[in-house]
Image (tube, rainbow, N blue to C red):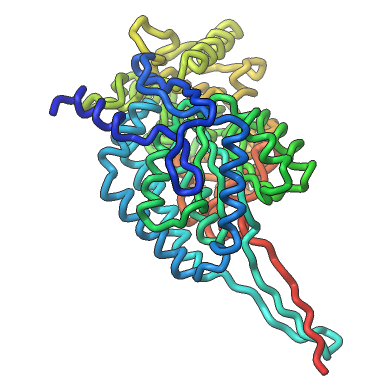
Length: 489
């Protein structure tokens, strides 16, 4: 089979309908929307475009399934997740190709994401059987306190396009483990990975109505009625801070439980005593994962004046050497951005920084090839006034800014409404811990450019979100604590 034939085969095999109450169904209106290949700008296929009525049908199916699923033994729910874990690994090649075609990332990264996504199912399979409570004597004697955990209830899960499989399993895993049913709305740019995951979950034995997937090109019209319905009891959202704020306002109406992983503006700090080669490798990991299209991407790189020239030269050499192209091609390290709007925004941010005095060390201009590509770019001397110092770049651009003191760089790193993750490189342990504690973020990477791990709590502070996903705390987002007072005769 030729490469093109295999690509067509994988797309043709992928589900393209809504998944409601265990059945594949067209949108009630018959409407569809196109999914594009960002490496060519051409249409891959069309998928069902749900109406508000379709969304409500999915939520009603989740609500109807909730009581029985909550009563399912934890071990049975854990077994479902483990079967799905194994199926993801068995089908990793086809799933990775499907993801690369709809999202653009290189196949090696897509394979890595499928493995990472599967780990959330294994992790929460283990957590499902460890939900516990407590029993104690009342301080005044007589009564007893019984504390138990129960599932929150039907949950709305909204996932982004940049990690279309892992952001789903990071929410679905704890929901199933806790005994919650759900309605998932994947991003319109990358619906195929989530639809493929729904197929796997059904095969793994997840009961009808427990996991429902609605795809739509009009998220607000479909999801707002579900949020305001009073039927849903939980919203978990990963996406931009601007959208998160609107969703929080909607959730306030029915006092929905919320967890949100929102925007980031990560600082990457290189102190003069750092191992520069390790720092450069860490910078590439923190900046170039997913072509920079990640909320955890290093957005502001602060490098001490003593080493900024050497660091910039090394980083520019390595960035310039990264092969750019279609993610399905051998050896490609940098794929396209998700769409034309993303490509335009990155170019505007670079142009703005250069006009304000930044110097281009490599990259900085789009080519004329088809697709939504942007070259790996390094800028130095990026001033505070540049837009990219305050906005998420979401592209393969590394902006360097010099600093002279620890106090100065900590203040600069904290001077943002965001607080998801920061990175720092130093060989001074005292400094590492001192700075890590001073940084106003939910996560800090010390001498490493990647912090995401299913066994660790992922999330931010300030405008970067509420709650945590993953780790031992991730399942708590889908559990309510109930206190039962018992009088003794």
